[in-house]
Length: 117
Image 1 (cartoon, rainbow, N blue to C red):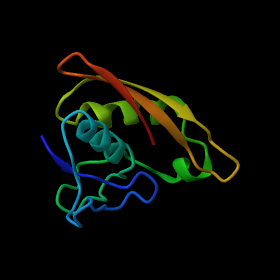
Image 2 (tube, rainbow, N blue to C red):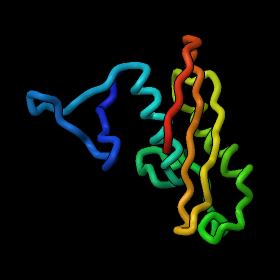
Image 3 (tube, rainbow, N blue to C red):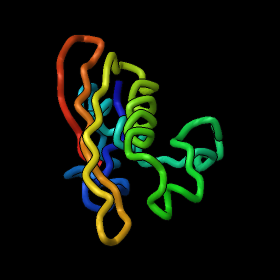
Image 4 (cartoon, one colour):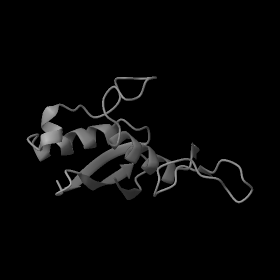
């Protein structure tokens, strides 16, 4: 499966050497889709508002349990086609109230990889 390649810094579309939209192939495309799924808030995708991680006031003021955020990130990763299992490690919350982490993914093919978000 192919996906449009997103720039790792800006998370925006990128171009290939010929000036065309760059694409990535299976493996990396699944990891990119996992990272996108974890970065999506519930209701944010106008074409499918059921996608995304739920949020409430607790996410923004730091009172939401980290274990809940971790399980939601893992559930979002498991919703991506081609993912057999996912394990999330969160980094934060930081002083700027941001939260990041990494997800170790096992593909349905048995291969493993990880992606940061």
